[in-house]
Image (cartoon, rainbow, N blue to C red):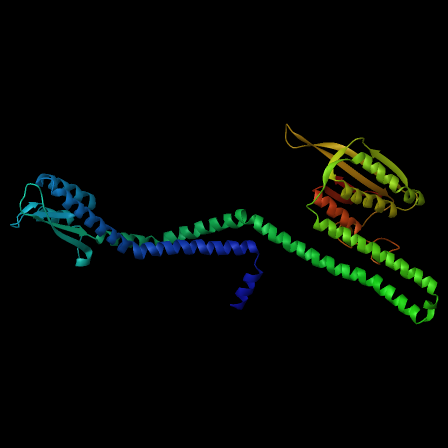
Length: 422
């Protein structure tokens, strides 16, 4: 039993909903069947008896205003409609309406085994043309409804089979169509929660290293231990570590801000052509220092709708990375152009494409899928001299994802290209 419970706990929510819905629908069908089988006969008997008593009472109240012929006519239709055996007698016991032999022949198909199989009603009834009351005797057979119960019982396997089939189909539709958005939300929240846990765990690790270095250096200087007697040198190193720590904290704040405010984008029409020229000029000192050649193939006056501040930050990070990780004397190539994508025979969709390429480097294929993950760096020593915190590209990815813009990083023969579509 415990194994079954554990398997159920580990089952995908989609299959849980499917199973529960199927069981509920099948259970509902069986309950309806049992209600029909056990309660229908008694309910139907009561209904027939109530109907007969109401009809008879109405007939007695009406007959007093009419003659015997009218009464016989009413009795004929009443017997026909309600499947009744009716005898009307005068005060001397003579049958005025109905005949015992005819009645027996008419109702001999009902083999009445006991008084429970019939309901007998006897009542006096008056007419306009008779001073003395007639005696009205009505026999109503109750056996047919019991036969219906037998039919229902024989149909039970088919009813349950159909109920199971309808239950499975209904559960499939319910679990796949109606609950799909709910499942997607739950899965998305679960994934986001796992990402947050990983992010917090990595932050702890990243913060621990510079704090440990600073703490060790300060302690060494406090007690004048060995090399730490040279306080000026190690104060400078401690200061550099605090700057790295400050930079890391600022980056983490930016990432957190981007995640928290993901839906609060301040959208406006931005001239992407002008923005790219401006960002390249901003990096001019680094470009000249690394002797990087620039090749700008930027179409004029291309506009996109975006949050200008965030897109500026993202593209600036990409350009900065391209310069920093290119060997001296290599090239930075920026292309901005538009292309038409056919949606159907009549319509096409205009897309703005951005490519930022830096030559002289390649990223191992196994790392390309992980490059946008938080704190990921190709260089595993995680030294600040050979790179940043690993949050830059993650922040870029977060900004592009929040806008719904496609982006990717890929290798060419002797270069790495960041590609984005707006």
